[in-house]
Amino acid sequence: MVVDDSAIIRGIITRWIEAETDMVVAASCRTGLDAVNQIERINPDAVILDIEMPDMDGITALPLLLAKKRDLVIIMASTLTLRNAEISLKALSLGATDYIPKPESNHLGGADTFRHELVQKIRHLTARLARRRVPSPPLAPAASQVAAAPAAAPVHHAPTKFSLRPFHKVRPQALLIGSSTGGPQALTALAAELAPIVDRVPVLITQHMPPTFTTILAQHIGRASSRPTHEGAEGQAVKAGNIYIAPGGLHMRVGRQGGNVAIALDDGPQVNFCRPAVDPLFMSAIDVWKGDLLAVILTGMGSDGMRGGRDVVAAGGNVIAQDEATSVVWGMPGAAAQAGICSAVLPLNQIGQKIQKILSGDFS
Image (cartoon, rainbow, N blue to C red; front, side, top):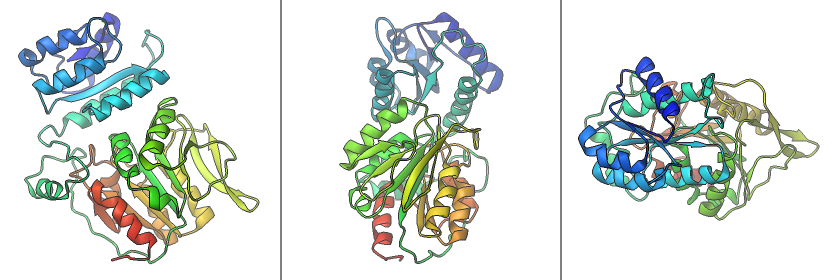
């Protein structure tokens, strides 16, 4: 179901979906109210839901749609404004599966990035409709039950077996985190456990996200962690007690400037089809801290972070990945796990505790 007040946008999205996926657009709705009224009759697997519409906007329609079909995949679509970024992240907390930023112009011809991201999200997020996302804290028993249940076909169509490597017994001087699809929800949940970690080492995060959205994400993580959280700025000193988030549209690296560690930003080519990308952050951190690193790879499509994580391990550091049961998409963490570079693959609600133990020198 495509829900947008622009007939042009509805038509273009419909053509993309039907041309590039194995799905059919069963309904095209102008308002959120139309979608709510038709949802039970149409019974779609997924909804592309605009935010700003007459009669009923997307954020109002969202809980009403989910009340009628709990396992519905809902992808919020919005233009790149601060207000819409805030609403999109709020929608994720209310049960939306993901979001996608629309081009600023209503003329979508040539909007290759939007088209690619939309099609990929639909493919990946609808591939596992049989598996409900597992809530994070405090449901460790539930996560175990889900992991033990018969698994749906993996999104990446690859074996899910993997082996763990022993931890290198080094206390990290920095914590690196990479995430993509499902990342805002995972990062916000993890942030509540980051306070004692941030007090000891700087935390640097790359989340695949456009400009404006990272501004709002930094505010959310700052509130959840109760620690200073910044969008990284060129030349900004990296210090313990702070969280730094790669700004949308720019790669974030770290480097030495005199006696300090500082952030370096660039708008160079995409890496792993992304900018910001996780690998540039991970690889640059090795030049600064050698192997005294802990890298965490959370939910996301693709394999970004695997190559950088492999280099972290080769330098003497450690990698932890989020497990499949609690990931919205087990692409990035799954790639790391299957590459054999992880020393732990854990449910989201156990990662914070594990990091704290490692910082205390407990590698059991």
